[in-house]
Amino acid sequence: MRRSLLLASTLTLALAASSAAAAYEPGTLALNRPVTERLTANDAPASNGGVSRDYRVALTAGSFVIVSVKSEDFDTTVELFGPNRSSQGSNDDGPNGGTDSLLVAEVSETGNYIVRVGSFSGGGDAGLGQFTIRVLQFENP
Image (cartoon, rainbow, N blue to C red; front, side, top):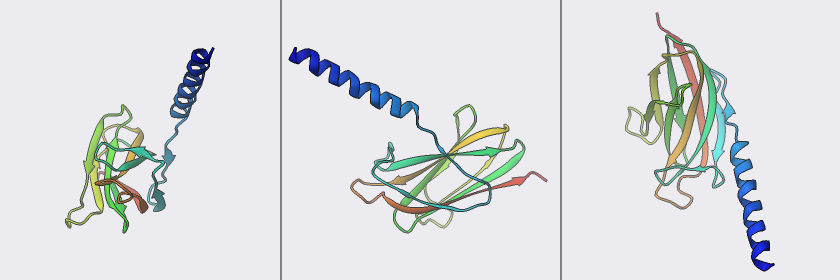
C-alpha cells in the first residue's frame, strides 16, 4: 500500500510538472517599445549557469531586427529564434565590450520569432535582476 501511494504521488507530481511545462507561453513584445522586467530564480535555467526568459515578436521578411538588452544588475545575453525554432543569432556583450547585449539580424521569413533574454552567471544571485529589452525592425531600403 505504501509503495502504491508513493508511486501515485510521484506520478501526480510528474503530471503536474508536465502540464506546467506544456502551458508555458512566452511573453509578447511590441516593436520599438522598451519593456523592463526582472529575471528571477523562477525563470528557466540556461546552459551557461544563469537563467532565461522568452518573448514572442512578429517580424517581417526582408527587414532587419535589432534587439537591445541592458541591465545594471547582471551580464545579459540575447538569442533570436526563427519561426522554425532555429537560431538566427546571439550576443553576449555588445560592441562596446560591456555586459549589455546587442543583436542585429536579417529577417528571412515572416512570422513569430522568439527572443530569449538570459543572464551569464557563475551561479547564486549574480544573474538575477532587472533588465530592459527593446526590439527595433527596419525595412531593407
